[in-house]
Image 1 (cartoon, rainbow, N blue to C red):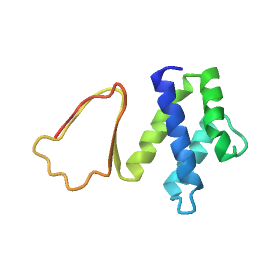
Image 2: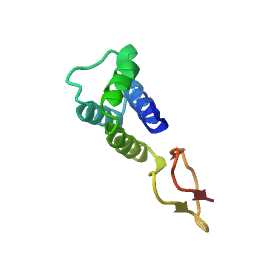
Image 3: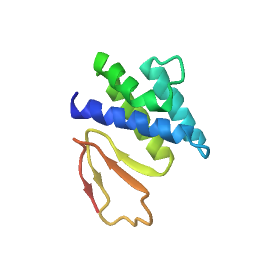
Length: 114
């Protein structure tokens, strides 16, 4: 399994955990519904089975990893993170940054200049 697919499995697992928490936000729940739809899952997997099921699904169709990353990045932007896609850069020279909750830079993302 390549790094991109491995990262997608981790993203699926993270959203699954967030969505099943008692304090889950609507963003987490919506992201989880979207992920299950993209992956073709018609039933709710048990939390302990999510990682193995994600690995199996993505091994059969690695192209789904792109959709997973899009959903995950959208989710993180909604909850206050900053996500940078697989192309491009973010330059914040001269910007005032008060609080950045999380910066998610993928394995081949652009650069962040602060």
